[in-house]
Image (cartoon, rainbow, N blue to C red):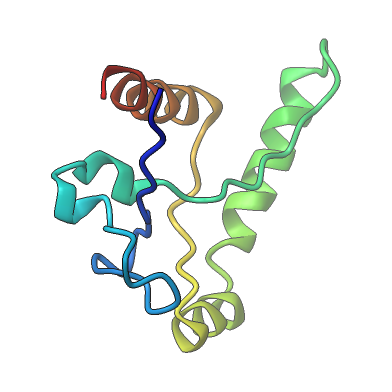
Length: 103
């Protein structure tokens, strides 16, 4: 079995300066891997009432649009993607794992 390293970054689609010999995913044709990000996920106990889930979701979606957070994101070049529902996150994750398994 061979292990091949690929640098993945949703902003920088070129080799990472600290590892110049490690190709980036985009350069190898794995564009789907350039959308890999670190997700911060909020979990709730099973059976949490939908009303509570809705209140928390609305608050989190609103917080991600806060102008101070958006400004910090732009200044530090740490993008904050659009809020993702559980269903959307599952779909994205399945696509990424499919690419990893098939290559």
